[in-house]
Image (cartoon, rainbow, N blue to C red; front, side, top):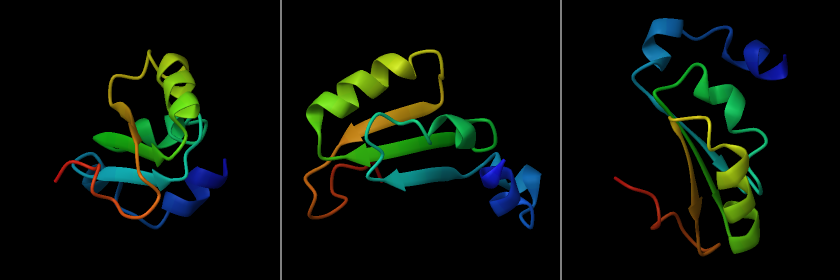
Amino acid sequence: RDFEFLIQPLEPNALKSKSSLEIGCAVGRLVRQPSYYFKQAIGIDVSKQAIEKGRTLLSDVVNAELILGNGSDLSALPD
């Protein structure tokens, strides 16, 4: 519900060609909701265990991706 409030002023069709990014996503609990609106929903976290668990939890979401980062920069993200 909060996510829908946040994106309310945005053009829904424009979101379908964009990606969302959550920094510090842990197991990706908040990555699922953006996946309904964006072309790709990405989460990044420094915890290998959280990313592995999140990948299992989000295995049914084809446009969600969880990435293990280094905590210093976003170099692990694709361009």
